[in-house]
Image 1: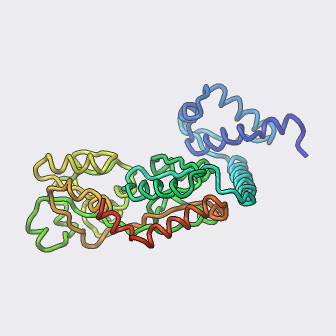
Image 2: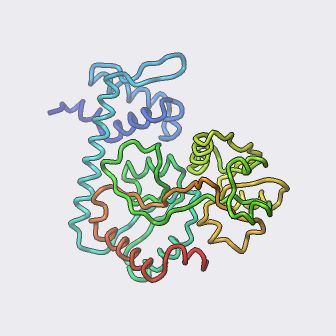
Image 3: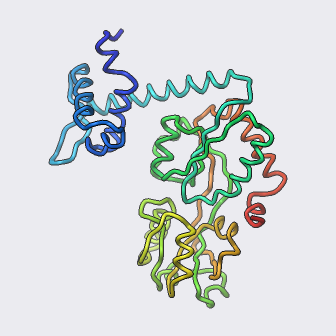
Length: 318
């Protein structure tokens, strides 16, 4: 057993500090994200190092890196977090009551109107279950589902930033395709746009690091075509659409789901790229989450919701 000093050092708070520093590899950035001072963070890491008897990080210039001991502790920390999350889920599974809260994180570039409509319907049927819905960035959504801060993530797959899938399950919602938004009548009549045609004009794009930004760059490069010249970047598809339609000679790539849900807003053509650029919009959750009564009910009602009218038809009727 650990002595009392060691138990205090290896508290959940201390391990969380260590885990965050391992992600950011920056004392300044980590202290800011945790809402503590940098000296407090440094002191906590030094306490852990004294207990394990080895340094956890080393520096090269201004950058820090995990030592071998740090890597061992990081793996153990993740195993501890997994055990805690699993125990929490198991306790919740034993509850037969259809009550409590379901926390859902949605990727902030996703067209969410159908999901929002479903939540209204779900609340009508299950008034004792609260739904927390939050828009998150790509990094935030994966961090929060790993740390059990959200029960369900709504995100696009595949995503090569996710390395460890052994503890997670997914449920496909729809396959979403990128549409070229443009004012070229010739392309519109042909019904498809090649990558080379798409880059003849500057683009307005999602921000760097956004899922579809990275996916399009990957597809263009794999086809040995230069990526489009970008003149502006935004986080919202509404901002992209406004920029395209208020400008002359600027293109954009927007998901088909957004185009269908907001058809009345479009003045320009929407044409699929060839080869197609697509991804699956998916529910992602920790394994066994769907055995928790309220989450099991959520997915059962979702299936019933779509059996009455498909996701695509619901998008078209918005």
